[in-house]
Image (cartoon, rainbow, N blue to C red; front, side, top):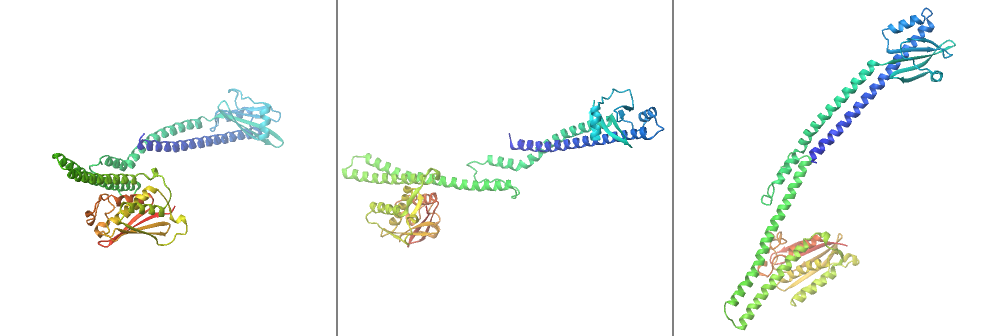
Length: 456
């Protein structure tokens, strides 16, 4: 069921319930008013008849019957009966109707309650007492409210017909209004269905820019901006990765082809094999970098986080960096002493953190002429701050904002071996741990990378 259909039916049901409740209220209110008004007429008629019979001596029973039957206010199927204290019938307005059953128990009940109303064979019937001095009478009046009941039937028909018409009008109006209310969503849906990978620059119309649907369109456009940026980044990544992978592969293939072109001396074969080995190792490093980048971009819910001491990770990264090149020098210091072990502990993935700091140390040593790196640990505002500094080639102001983009390499860095993946991996790992990485650099003087990680 579509939203439009659901809204239409909901609106129709609400209106129908209101109309039916209103109709029932009117009908019940009018029915009660008719009943009270008719019993009031019966009471007046009964008291008038009793007064004429008992108090006016000139009027006997026969004359009173003539008056009752020919009065302008005579009621349909009217019958009036008067009983004395001995329960004897002293007056009946007519003998033509079916007798009205009156028992001594009924008369006694009327005397006790003074006024009693009931229905007898569809006739409204009223019993009341009438006192004249020390003499007590019971007067019973019965009649059928033919006009009032006809009006009640007509009112019921009008209310029923009006309710049905109201329901139909409510359904049509609900259909119209829901269509108008959902038209912007329909337009957004149509525009979104036309967006594909070939036209990610297309944006959804935000309408008046004020209501909730306009806000939805605005948020969707922002999402499209993020998708377009990610799509562009992915295309650049694939292009750069293909290029980086093709270079060592092409070198390996060309060297193998050269070696197979003719017979060569053992030394020449050793030289070619050594060159092929270097290219293969370069390809391995590139593949490992791509794998680490993919792992760093994985969903955080799939990464198991445990308490990790940053100083121990840094010592491990220091050992690995020195083991790979004995000419390197890495100095590790504390800017301030921690208050306790908790200050050095973060909730993280130890292997990923080790990769982060290994990349930073490798870069610092590689881009410095003296192959030295300085590492300092500080604590501030609930974060562990690790700064890795070097006095190497530095980065220009124009290129600082791009150094975390995969495969980007600054102009001075292109004279060194590498693929431009290390810093992007570092940034992803820092963000994965709820932290950040910032850089301060001066071209020709060196760089400082500061990693901020929240405490455990």
